[in-house]
Amino acid sequence: MNRFLLILLALFISLETANAQTFPALTGRVVDQADLLNPAEEASLTAKLQALETQSDRQLVVATLRSLEGYEISDYGYQLGRKWGIGKDGKGEAE
Image (cartoon, rainbow, N blue to C red; front, side):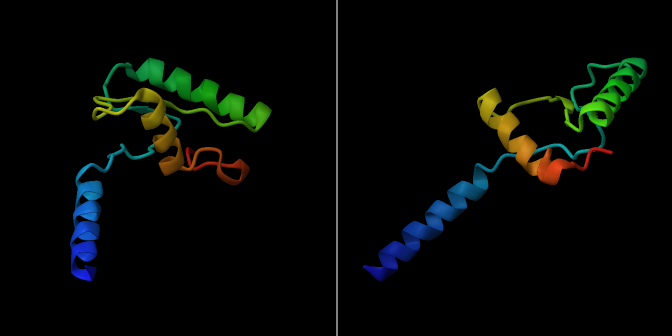
């Protein structure tokens, strides 16, 4: 019985690892993985997002992605925000 449970646990862990989401690196306030923005648009967005954070102490990042890897956008976005630490301790890492 214990052996069966160990095998079942190992199978579950391997399935979870195989289905793990991947996320782009947080490289700034704008992460344009899908290459939708030209450099001027990205610079303008970055400046606006920096001004928003300075004025309101709220963080907002813009991310374009090549794929949601089969996940719902709400789930992917939530997990991405947690991975990046957006809003953590009142400050984030998008500098």
